[in-house]
Length: 147
Image (cartoon, rainbow, N blue to C red; front, side):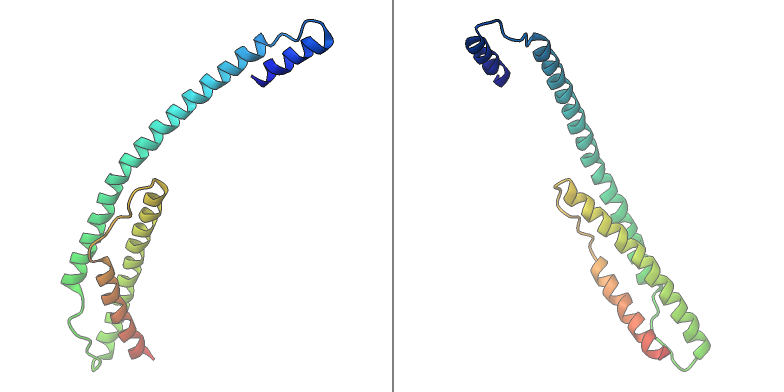
């Protein structure tokens, strides 16, 4: 449009024929069609990724549930400080639990970030905060015993 206005101005001021803009306009239309096609493809890909987020939420939720079930079943019932060898083994096991929890929390945090990127609500992993608090209390008790 701007090109056409300038071309018209050139013709009136210079009293001669303006510059032919047909090839440029044709190429511009081709570019617009290509950009539109690219945007459509990009939207399709974003939709596909957005739909795959639901599956990822399910996978991480299952991971959290399995971890919670194992922790609930296998967590130490009491800390017996009278047996140093058993307590040392228990401390090592609790540190392993802490490392496993870190992996689960990182997976849930990554997923929450990805959900926000796609304007999806962040997933709520029931019980993860409670398990984290429970393990951290055991870790604190073990740290107290070690010091």
